[in-house]
Length: 320
Image 1 (tube, rainbow, N blue to C red):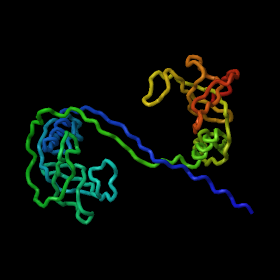
Image 2: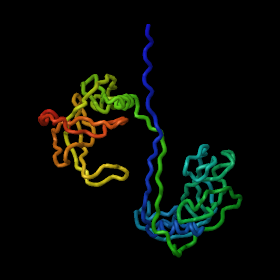
Image 3: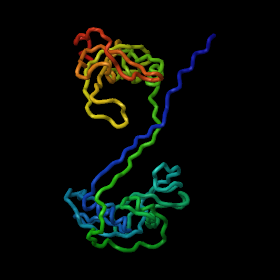
């Protein structure tokens, strides 16, 4: 008896999404960040007299604009915490630490930051801490390197501050980054592996019998799993398209070019693809196209006209 073939391994790969986020600062946030550069922590007083740190520009209760800045202490009390045993890239500390909410002396709200502690047994709600300033400060929240334990009793009140500093910080650039492991799942793993063999494989719904390309693992209409693989194409029909006139960074394609929805023969869902081998202003709905593969490519580089007559509108109108 021949043993059953084992299913192909589901693909997984590390993925990084990263971009710089640039924003300008209003007078409140400008004063707050510039103050951190000067080792001063500022909050803002709301209409009911509460002091918020970090400061906000609008009262959370009345929605009124607030501008009354006050200086608070650099010591405070932990209100809640969570231990971080495995720090990630870009976090405040490279060794295990606690995320803490700290209500600074003179403030009525808490600020989130890292606490440098030897272990979770050294952290507790109600413990006293103080700011550890960064050696080099630029006017960013990272000017507070972290908090560290402090045994002194609570002291000081919020005192008025005009928010004026020389060379005020007026804008920031924050690097946003997300690292994670992505898996396309069973269905799209099979789809990607088939593309490497220059085949396009979809899956048919056992209920409505529609063929989805790329497959999703389940029918979005019927809500049932799709496991019946169907090879479609390779040719297809342009159902709709757009002309791209702005060159994308790191994309070696001259503008203008055409990006289209293409319904491959036998599929009930159009996929995306670039159209080449024809002037951009001659691309049209109903144009019959076929894939063009590059040497070693794992997916079609683009689609080009087959030379067949255009498809009748009624043949693809439900796929637009």
